[in-house]
Image (cartoon, rainbow, N blue to C red; front, top):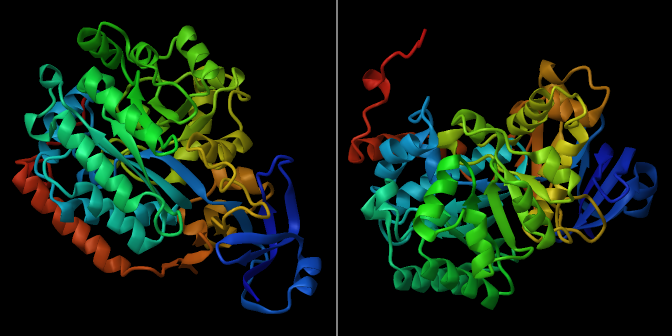
Length: 468
């Protein structure tokens, strides 16, 4: 018996042939795609099915893969407006992070993952770098498990950088970090049927010593080349601070330490040089492009078209909700397409189809899972979404499903989401948790965190900023 049959759908497979099936059906057995093809043929082949979904007029897409976020920051939306990165870190993010509790990270992750699921995200890569108290990572993993989303937790760290504004309360020494990293790997890595994974995520090259970076690389090598992700060249400050601490720019430090290879995911990469890009290509290092965050913090425009022309794998990251201010992949996809068109004054600098690839198969490749997720193919895990254009006028008329998705859609159009063969959202309702309760808890938790962190730029304390 098959578990799920979705029939009468337009199926955008994103397979190697980039096949689109205009009257298609897809079958799910356990957690994998068992079959895919013409709807009539599939329906006649599989008559014993637990659940049948009629997707007439709707589109199946692979689930989106968000390769970079900081879920704790969902509690800080709207508090860091109109600042550059350095000021944003020093005056808001680091002070708030110093007061985080495990319940805060759980509530934040629930909120961020619910928003992500509603925008079609089925895989989240979280980058949890501040650690004022034990157990903060566990709060995020608990949310992953409860909601049923596919999640990678990058255990972040900082052990230096006070001269650059890092709050002492969120630093940890190498021994403490290694002990907790190993605990997380042993307790959570490849659990939940492989849905939960652990990686490492040093906050920045300029906030970690050589000893720390070498230890983290050694640990991921022990765990079958698990993910090593790090912010690289987000701003000129990143490059100069790394040089001040290590004597070299950030990507050069990775090269010196031998932190090179396909499991290295570099985030932002706004100021990569030609040499940096050649190094990334040579060692198959991946990139997470954080369009909205780079725009919000006025950091610059990453040379994504140049990277793609060189054959570098580029994926998409929504980044933390304090520098976005959302976890909305649909919004991010549109921004990505438009940013590169206007930056190059070239309508062919980025296409809707390429943006979809960045959000799906290239995202899977960026985290070493291209053989498991990222496209709708027989044998791959059943991570997918059902897109219904009729749920909002913005998406009507639909002439090209991919164009409609990237340029003319909203979260209202994401009708259902399946992760690992399980229906997580159906008919616009989250099935795995009480969403109303989660949103209320997140609001209350955010308010308490602002009180503890003495953040006053909210509600009555916020000053109108019309500028001109």
